[in-house]
Amino acid sequence: MTAPKKDFDFARPKTIEQLYNLVQECQHEGRQFIFSAGGTDIMPNLKSEILSPDIVISLTGLRALNNIEKQGDHIIIGALTSLSELCSNNNIQKYLPALARAAHKVASPQIRNRATIGGNIMVENRCSYINQSPINRESHSPCFKIGGDVCHLVKSAKRGDDILCQARFVSDTAPLLLLQNSTVNIIGPAGSKEIKLADLYLNDGIESKSLMHGEIITHIKVEITENSLSHYEKLTIRNALDFPSLGVAALRRGNGDISVALTGLNTRPGVFHAKLENHETSDDMIVDICRKANDFTVTYQQDFFPRGYRKNMISVFIRRAINKILEGAKS
Ligand SMILES: Cc1cc2nc3c(=O)[nH]c(=O)nc-3n(C[C@H](O)[C@H](O)[C@H](O)COP(=O)(O)OP(=O)(O)OC[C@H]3O[C@@H](n4cnc5c(N)ncnc54)[C@H](O)[C@@H]3O)c2cc1C
Ligand code: SF4
Image (tube, rainbow, N blue to C red):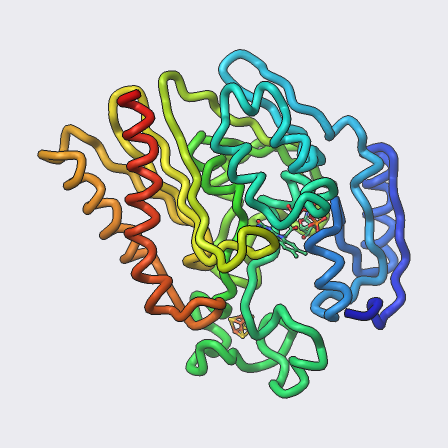
């Protein structure tokens, strides 16, 4: 892939104050800006002209956002923490080993050294029509996601639909973070706030996150669940570099209740809960979760694997993830 066609400016503020002075300046002058952390998602999108900002504002100068700390029954993860740091951190390995496993399954070692956790939970939704080079895209007219008037995946889609774009949610770390009741701290021109991670995600593949333009995530606050076991399973063609064709995180709480979160199967992540006491056997409980997950799933043909195969694999991967935590509970 070649360099981005359109030139853009680059800035790397060192403090939040500098960042927001720059944001205000851009807003005043009508300059389009985007934020970049590790840049591993942004760069391919700049090169393939899905993004064409006037200025890229790097967050990497905000060094205070690169830390992991245990505070009581929470782990606070700075948004600029790299996925490699996350994987090797003692507190993450001790209290959130499935998060380390999920982060380790992202891309490749080189990418994980740059990629951040903030960028991972904010990673752009993907679709096989849009995530290819401009040369390949030339054979199709521009779709809704790049300002066009058509969707190549869902031909009947039209402006005004509840969900205009079906580009898939693909973050590997978000499912586990959702199961751990995580919240995110946000700062923006209008001040700071804390929201549930679940409220970050919206239904549409274009407007897929609830952050206002100009807001950034500073920290992720992750609950440590006492006596719990968790696991992450990911379906991909290769063991490295591929986004999840589907991903399943499973958590077993101390009382035996099971929760499952999915990625790769809809425009947003899905979270499902089942109480052991409501089922005769643990197998009935798994069947119930698989049914809910299948109802939630929207498998259009936008992945390497055929849609039918991916759909069949949902129950297989949910069962695999849950069995892992049930086995862990016995040992
Ligand atoms: C070959 C390849 C394979 C990949 N495989 C996977 C994979 O298997 N699984 C996976 O999940 N991802 C994958 N990715 C995507 C990407 O590498 C990761 O999601 C990564 O974690 C993104 O982090 P980043 O810091 O590089 O994000 P960036 O590219 O810097 O940013 C991504 C998005 O997040 C926003 N953002 C970043 N930080 C913040 C913040 N603090 N506050 C608000 N917004 C923010 C940016 O504005 C941008 O919209 C892959 C990428 C490549 C190139
Ligand atoms: S699903 Fe979204 S990205 Fe894919 S073709 Fe349709 S509008 Fe474009």
